[in-house]
Amino acid sequence: MNKFFSNRRLVIIIVGLIVSFGLMSFSVVVRNNRATPPMIQQFGNDVVGLGNRLVALPVAGVKNSVSSISNLLNTYQENNRLKKQVQQLAQTKVRDQALTGENQKLKTQLKLNNTLTDYDALTATVIARTPSSWQDQVVIDKGSAAGIKKNMPVLSGKGLVGRIAEVNRTNSKVELLSNTNEAANRFAVQITNKSGETVNGIISGYNNDKNQIEMGNITTKKKIEKGDRVSTSGLGGVMPAGLYIGTVAATGHDDYGLASKIMINPAADVSSVSFVTVAIRQAQTTE
Image (cartoon, rainbow, N blue to C red; front, side):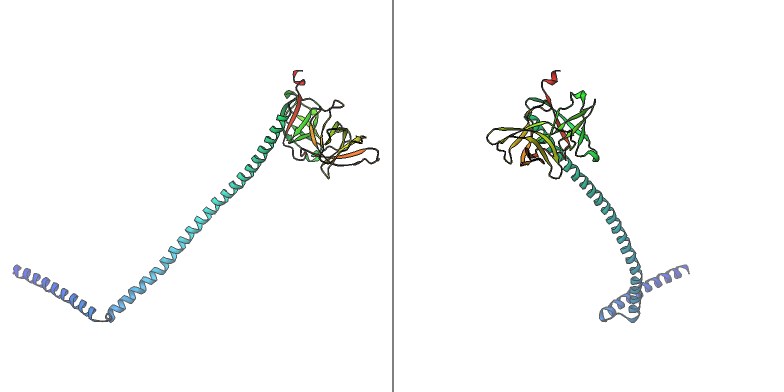
Protein backbone atom coordinates (compact mmCIF):
# COMPACT_ATOMS: atom_id res chain seq x y z
CA MET A 1 0.00 0.00 0.00
CA ASN A 2 2.77 2.41 0.92
CA LYS A 3 4.63 1.47 -2.24
CA PHE A 4 1.57 2.34 -4.28
CA PHE A 5 1.24 5.78 -2.78
CA SER A 6 4.95 6.37 -3.20
CA ASN A 7 4.80 5.46 -6.86
CA ARG A 8 1.70 7.60 -7.32
CA ARG A 9 3.44 10.64 -5.86
CA LEU A 10 6.37 10.10 -8.22
CA VAL A 11 4.01 9.84 -11.17
CA ILE A 12 2.30 13.13 -10.18
CA ILE A 13 5.66 14.91 -9.95
CA ILE A 14 6.76 13.60 -13.34
CA VAL A 15 3.43 14.60 -14.92
CA GLY A 16 3.72 18.07 -13.34
CA LEU A 17 7.17 18.57 -14.75
CA ILE A 18 6.04 17.45 -18.21
CA VAL A 19 3.08 19.85 -18.09
CA SER A 20 5.34 22.75 -16.92
CA PHE A 21 7.86 22.20 -19.69
CA GLY A 22 5.01 21.93 -22.15
CA LEU A 23 3.48 25.24 -20.99
CA MET A 24 6.86 26.93 -21.15
CA SER A 25 7.49 25.66 -24.66
CA PHE A 26 4.00 26.70 -25.71
CA SER A 27 4.53 30.19 -24.24
CA VAL A 28 7.81 30.59 -26.10
CA VAL A 29 6.26 29.47 -29.37
CA VAL A 30 3.28 31.80 -28.91
CA ARG A 31 5.55 34.74 -28.03
CA ASN A 32 7.77 34.17 -31.02
CA ASN A 33 4.83 33.86 -33.38
CA ARG A 34 3.01 36.97 -32.17
CA ALA A 35 3.99 40.54 -32.99
CA THR A 36 2.79 41.69 -29.60
CA PRO A 37 2.71 39.89 -26.23
CA PRO A 38 -0.59 38.72 -24.77
CA MET A 39 -2.88 41.26 -23.13
CA ILE A 40 -2.16 40.00 -19.64
CA GLN A 41 1.59 40.19 -20.27
CA GLN A 42 1.24 43.70 -21.71
CA PHE A 43 -0.72 44.78 -18.67
CA GLY A 44 1.90 43.29 -16.39
CA ASN A 45 4.71 44.92 -18.31
CA ASP A 46 2.95 48.31 -18.19
CA VAL A 47 2.37 48.00 -14.47
CA VAL A 48 6.00 47.05 -13.91
CA GLY A 49 7.22 49.91 -16.17
CA LEU A 50 5.02 52.43 -14.38
CA GLY A 51 6.29 51.21 -11.02
CA ASN A 52 9.86 51.53 -12.22
CA ARG A 53 9.26 55.12 -13.35
CA LEU A 54 7.53 56.02 -10.08
CA VAL A 55 10.46 54.65 -8.14
CA ALA A 56 13.13 55.99 -10.52
CA LEU A 57 11.92 59.62 -10.55
CA PRO A 58 12.33 60.37 -6.82
CA VAL A 59 15.50 58.30 -6.67
CA ALA A 60 16.95 60.29 -9.58
CA GLY A 61 15.80 63.53 -7.95
CA VAL A 62 17.45 62.64 -4.66
CA LYS A 63 20.58 61.55 -6.50
CA ASN A 64 20.72 64.83 -8.47
CA SER A 65 20.11 66.86 -5.29
CA VAL A 66 22.87 65.06 -3.44
CA SER A 67 25.18 65.56 -6.42
CA SER A 68 24.28 69.28 -6.61
CA ILE A 69 24.88 69.76 -2.88
CA SER A 70 28.19 67.94 -3.16
CA ASN A 71 29.22 70.10 -6.12
CA LEU A 72 28.16 73.24 -4.25
CA LEU A 73 30.21 72.26 -1.21
CA ASN A 74 33.20 71.46 -3.40
CA THR A 75 32.80 74.81 -5.17
CA TYR A 76 32.58 76.66 -1.84
CA GLN A 77 35.69 74.93 -0.51
CA GLU A 78 37.57 75.55 -3.74
CA ASN A 79 36.48 79.20 -3.70
CA ASN A 80 37.85 79.59 -0.16
CA ARG A 81 41.13 77.99 -1.19
CA LEU A 82 41.39 80.29 -4.21
CA LYS A 83 40.64 83.34 -2.06
CA LYS A 84 43.42 82.40 0.32
CA GLN A 85 45.78 81.87 -2.60
CA VAL A 86 44.85 85.27 -4.07
CA GLN A 87 45.48 86.93 -0.69
CA GLN A 88 48.80 85.14 -0.36
CA LEU A 89 49.78 86.17 -3.89
CA ALA A 90 48.82 89.79 -3.17
CA GLN A 91 50.88 89.76 0.03
CA THR A 92 53.78 88.14 -1.80
CA LYS A 93 53.60 90.74 -4.56
CA VAL A 94 53.60 93.63 -2.07
CA ARG A 95 56.51 92.05 -0.17
CA ASP A 96 58.44 91.48 -3.41
CA GLN A 97 57.86 95.07 -4.48
CA ALA A 98 59.03 96.33 -1.09
CA LEU A 99 62.11 94.09 -1.17
CA THR A 100 62.90 95.13 -4.75
CA GLY A 101 62.66 98.81 -3.84
CA GLU A 102 64.73 98.30 -0.70
CA ASN A 103 67.34 96.33 -2.65
CA GLN A 104 67.59 99.06 -5.27
CA LYS A 105 67.99 101.74 -2.60
CA LEU A 106 70.68 99.73 -0.84
CA LYS A 107 72.54 99.26 -4.15
CA THR A 108 72.39 103.00 -4.78
CA GLN A 109 73.55 103.67 -1.23
CA LEU A 110 76.45 101.24 -1.63
CA LYS A 111 77.48 102.94 -4.86
CA LEU A 112 77.39 106.30 -3.07
CA ASN A 113 79.48 104.94 -0.20
CA ASN A 114 82.18 103.79 -2.62
CA THR A 115 82.62 107.39 -3.83
CA LEU A 116 83.36 108.73 -0.33
CA THR A 117 87.09 108.10 -0.46
CA ASP A 118 87.99 110.73 2.16
CA TYR A 119 85.34 109.66 4.65
CA ASP A 120 84.23 106.66 6.65
CA ALA A 121 80.72 105.89 5.45
CA LEU A 122 78.28 104.85 8.16
CA THR A 123 75.00 103.51 6.82
CA ALA A 124 71.87 104.04 8.92
CA THR A 125 68.15 103.38 8.58
CA VAL A 126 65.40 105.97 8.96
CA ILE A 127 63.26 104.89 11.92
CA ALA A 128 60.93 107.88 12.31
CA ARG A 129 59.46 110.65 10.22
CA THR A 130 56.48 112.52 11.63
CA PRO A 131 53.84 114.01 9.30
CA SER A 132 54.09 117.39 11.02
CA SER A 133 57.81 117.64 10.20
CA TRP A 134 57.93 115.48 7.08
CA GLN A 135 59.90 118.07 5.09
CA ASP A 136 62.08 119.09 8.03
CA GLN A 137 63.72 116.10 9.66
CA VAL A 138 64.06 112.33 10.05
CA VAL A 139 65.37 110.15 12.86
CA ILE A 140 67.99 107.49 12.11
CA ASP A 141 69.04 104.43 14.14
CA LYS A 142 72.65 105.49 14.78
CA GLY A 143 73.93 107.86 17.49
CA SER A 144 76.97 108.81 19.48
CA ALA A 145 77.69 105.14 20.25
CA ALA A 146 78.41 104.69 16.52
CA GLY A 147 80.63 107.78 16.32
CA ILE A 148 78.09 110.28 15.00
CA LYS A 149 78.47 113.95 15.93
CA LYS A 150 76.44 117.08 15.34
CA ASN A 151 76.71 118.79 11.90
CA MET A 152 78.02 115.69 10.16
CA PRO A 153 76.77 115.50 6.56
CA VAL A 154 74.07 112.97 5.69
CA LEU A 155 73.71 111.54 2.18
CA SER A 156 71.15 109.33 0.50
CA GLY A 157 70.68 108.04 -3.03
CA LYS A 158 73.04 110.11 -5.13
CA GLY A 159 73.80 113.12 -2.96
CA LEU A 160 73.48 115.21 0.16
CA VAL A 161 70.12 115.29 1.96
CA GLY A 162 70.99 117.15 5.17
CA ARG A 163 73.10 117.16 8.28
CA ILE A 164 73.02 115.83 11.83
CA ALA A 165 71.12 118.31 14.04
CA GLU A 166 70.82 116.33 17.27
CA VAL A 167 72.72 113.31 18.59
CA ASN A 168 71.54 110.78 21.16
CA ARG A 169 73.18 107.60 22.36
CA THR A 170 71.41 105.23 19.95
CA ASN A 171 69.75 107.57 17.42
CA SER A 172 70.16 110.93 15.77
CA LYS A 173 67.98 113.60 14.23
CA VAL A 174 68.75 114.67 10.67
CA GLU A 175 67.87 118.15 9.46
CA LEU A 176 66.92 117.86 5.78
CA LEU A 177 67.77 120.25 2.95
CA SER A 178 64.03 120.78 2.50
CA ASN A 179 63.79 122.40 5.93
CA THR A 180 62.46 125.93 5.34
CA ASN A 181 63.50 127.22 8.77
CA GLU A 182 65.56 130.39 8.41
CA ALA A 183 68.26 129.02 10.71
CA ALA A 184 68.49 125.64 9.03
CA ASN A 185 70.90 124.33 6.42
CA ARG A 186 72.77 127.54 5.84
CA PHE A 187 76.08 126.20 4.60
CA ALA A 188 78.46 127.11 1.82
CA VAL A 189 78.28 125.50 -1.63
CA GLN A 190 79.97 125.99 -4.95
CA ILE A 191 79.07 125.58 -8.61
CA THR A 192 81.56 124.29 -11.14
CA ASN A 193 80.75 125.54 -14.64
CA LYS A 194 81.67 124.07 -18.01
CA SER A 195 84.96 126.00 -18.01
CA GLY A 196 86.02 124.53 -14.68
CA GLU A 197 85.50 127.81 -12.82
CA THR A 198 83.85 127.78 -9.40
CA VAL A 199 81.11 130.07 -8.13
CA ASN A 200 80.58 130.22 -4.37
CA GLY A 201 77.34 130.83 -2.55
CA ILE A 202 75.17 129.72 0.36
CA ILE A 203 72.14 127.47 0.57
CA SER A 204 69.38 129.94 1.39
CA GLY A 205 66.15 127.92 1.28
CA TYR A 206 64.03 125.26 -0.32
CA ASN A 207 61.11 125.57 -2.74
CA ASN A 208 58.63 122.85 -1.75
CA ASP A 209 56.40 123.47 -4.77
CA LYS A 210 59.23 122.81 -7.23
CA ASN A 211 61.29 120.54 -4.96
CA GLN A 212 64.35 122.67 -5.61
CA ILE A 213 67.12 124.04 -3.41
CA GLU A 214 67.68 127.81 -3.40
CA MET A 215 71.21 129.17 -3.51
CA GLY A 216 71.90 132.83 -2.77
CA ASN A 217 74.64 135.36 -1.90
CA ILE A 218 76.18 135.16 -5.39
CA THR A 219 77.85 138.29 -6.75
CA THR A 220 80.13 136.85 -9.40
CA LYS A 221 79.66 137.50 -13.11
CA LYS A 222 80.98 134.10 -14.13
CA LYS A 223 78.78 132.21 -16.55
CA ILE A 224 76.47 129.68 -14.95
CA GLU A 225 74.37 127.34 -17.05
CA LYS A 226 71.64 124.83 -16.47
CA GLY A 227 73.13 121.43 -15.58
CA ASP A 228 76.28 122.78 -13.89
CA ARG A 229 77.34 120.63 -10.94
CA VAL A 230 76.78 121.85 -7.37
CA SER A 231 78.68 120.56 -4.33
CA THR A 232 79.71 121.66 -0.86
CA SER A 233 82.66 124.06 -0.74
CA GLY A 234 83.79 123.46 2.85
CA LEU A 235 83.93 127.20 3.59
CA GLY A 236 82.72 128.15 7.03
CA GLY A 237 83.65 124.79 8.54
CA VAL A 238 80.07 123.57 8.86
CA MET A 239 80.12 121.08 6.00
CA PRO A 240 83.13 119.31 4.45
CA ALA A 241 84.01 120.06 0.84
CA GLY A 242 83.26 117.95 -2.21
CA LEU A 243 79.86 116.43 -1.32
CA TYR A 244 77.54 116.32 -4.32
CA ILE A 245 74.27 118.25 -3.95
CA GLY A 246 72.74 118.46 -7.43
CA THR A 247 72.70 120.45 -10.66
CA VAL A 248 71.68 123.98 -11.62
CA ALA A 249 68.03 124.16 -12.68
CA ALA A 250 67.63 127.91 -13.33
CA THR A 251 69.29 131.25 -12.61
CA GLY A 252 67.79 134.58 -11.60
CA HIS A 253 67.96 137.37 -9.02
CA ASP A 254 66.86 137.62 -5.43
CA ASP A 255 63.93 139.76 -4.23
CA TYR A 256 66.16 142.83 -3.99
CA GLY A 257 67.80 142.41 -7.39
CA LEU A 258 71.24 142.73 -5.87
CA ALA A 259 72.63 139.25 -6.39
CA SER A 260 72.08 136.21 -8.50
CA LYS A 261 69.69 133.55 -7.28
CA ILE A 262 70.11 129.97 -8.44
CA MET A 263 67.68 127.07 -8.23
CA ILE A 264 69.19 123.60 -7.83
CA ASN A 265 67.69 120.21 -8.63
CA PRO A 266 68.77 118.00 -5.70
CA ALA A 267 70.49 114.72 -6.57
CA ALA A 268 68.64 112.92 -3.79
CA ASP A 269 64.88 112.75 -3.24
CA VAL A 270 64.45 114.13 0.29
CA SER A 271 60.76 113.16 0.29
CA SER A 272 61.62 109.45 0.06
CA VAL A 273 64.51 108.67 2.37
CA SER A 274 64.75 105.14 3.80
CA PHE A 275 68.50 104.63 4.15
CA VAL A 276 71.18 107.26 4.69
CA THR A 277 74.95 107.47 4.88
CA VAL A 278 76.63 109.63 7.48
CA ALA A 279 79.99 110.82 6.17
CA ILE A 280 82.52 110.75 9.00
CA ARG A 281 85.86 112.37 8.35
CA GLN A 282 88.61 109.83 8.68
CA ALA A 283 90.60 112.17 10.92
CA GLN A 284 87.66 112.33 13.30
CA THR A 285 87.56 108.55 13.78
CA THR A 286 90.93 108.68 15.60
CA GLU A 287 89.78 111.19 18.15
